[in-house]
Image (cartoon, rainbow, N blue to C red; front, side):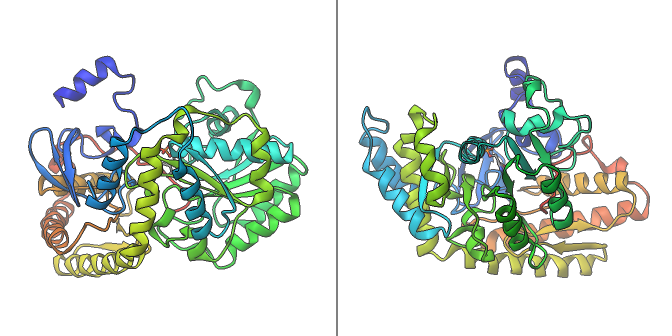
Length: 435
Ligand SMILES: Cc1ncc(COP(=O)(O)O)c(C=O)c1O
């Protein structure tokens, strides 16, 4: 917290990512600064050890400091990383992506997710000659997206979180980014009809922790075809954790374009836009250019991560591990006698505290985060799995959950939840329409 106070003097907002602000967890109790990490765990600057159930905000898929990825990256570093000319890895990774991901026939690189989304949106606008983008969920910090809040209503309230002022976003972009609700095809169809001939793209996460309604994504795909809009899947979080060919392979719906970042390179900065040739090829005539997009650390990390995820069968491993975590947490909750369900797809499980009063529910979730942190488990009430988590993490977490559930159960019974909180209530985690 002392470091954070120093940061607040020098870094506007204190952190680089809103999800790393300490008020997103148990403020003053949860760890704020890491010193190092290995496998499924990290150590904070005070020397405390934590199991990391947020997995680098979803960017760590194989585990921290994975020996194979890190060895490949270190070898690459010793060869120099960014050159005056290009490197073969650009082509090798493109070939790998086109082999693995159903919609990929051509690719462009970036360094992070929001940037890749902005690139995909630029390409879609360039290809169609249209300006408007229909979106669902979170897609980064760039003008095209935050422009959604230039309109009267706060469009991002239910897609990100309430209270985002579009400060610094050109007012001329008002009306160019329009939100739609996940799962509601008639609403999307109406929106397309109202903006006929003006919509360049529909961008959305295909799924997060629950499966889409049957036929929904195929319906979105059909609407895109009907109205001439490019269908972009944002696979930055879902990525290759469900399947080595991405969520699109897992769900059997192939979009026109897709963006990948966080889960693809085991924590090394890397992003990419992949897509069908007819949509990607015109990007060659657009001004989309940056020095560090050829950086070989990200390219090497992504190529090695994709290879290792396939070799180690990570998607299946995560599915089995998540199913085990869910069923054992459910047993613990039943033993303790607390009304909490462990829900969500096996790859992305989450706890649902069944408390009717929303204010009390937020307090309960914060108390859970606080008590788990005290027992060496850093996380929210949801779990980002990675392949380094195993039986010892499961055992420690189940014991911590049992003790935390007992505290919550007794606190609820005695109406003492707020007394038990040693911190302010957790600020809204990113709300996403895609759960
Ligand atoms: C679905 C989705 N899109 C875009 C982003 C932005 O990615 P980045 O933080 O790498 O810019 C994220 C990050 O959480 C994301 O989950």
